[in-house]
Image (cartoon, rainbow, N blue to C red; front, side, top):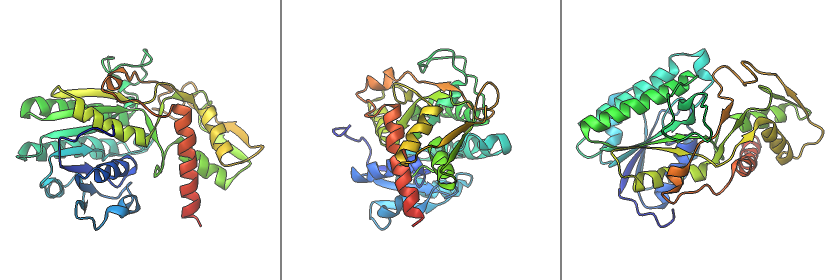
Length: 329
């Protein structure tokens, strides 16, 4: 990854003030790329990219993908789009059924329309999700698994975005890389099981409530491994549309994550209470209970996760505990 030569000098990162987006921005800026970030700051935080404000190679635009004029302004001079902007919370779609349509599908359509009209920007890297597979019967799950039957509106919207990108790419000559991500964790994350556990234990260090039955078992990948994979996938892909799974090669269950977080917070005698969950022990409706991706395809390009799932969880827990404590001092 260190020796990877970029084929582009300027990039637009949608959602670049967010969790994964800001780490990607860091890597691109460190490698000398001219970076424009478009973010409406609904989930992203300005502090995530504050170190680059004022840099001559960096431009930040507060704008929304639901407004095509914002996209056109942000895309000026860019050769590639890293499209990370989306509703980041899978659970929210159960309460607000419109959010995944607007923030994922409609936003992606608007972006693709501006790309279609652009003379220069004809490449896109899209962060999709393992949730497009739904309840996969084959694990590890390869990219050519089917039929794809998402069980959440989030997963459905990501799959719809993949289809739109494929259609636009073949019709209008885009180069597209679709990355189906496992659970990405690490510093600057503001949602997910580790973040939730830390905040629950800060509120009550004696008892930890865990949604579900604790046996939910999934792949977790540290964000630094993730952003490297996005760049390797783009630079080494050859087809007009390529799809890659990105994740670790093992999985860890929620009960283990709870123990790791308790250890990293240096707490003793914590009672773990499982809610039992819904639909067979899930944390919530639409929660995929088991997920493990087959990452053979991306590994063939020379990428490999530096941390396994448990290692990523432990590192992420340390990072998030430090950040939360620093914010509250």
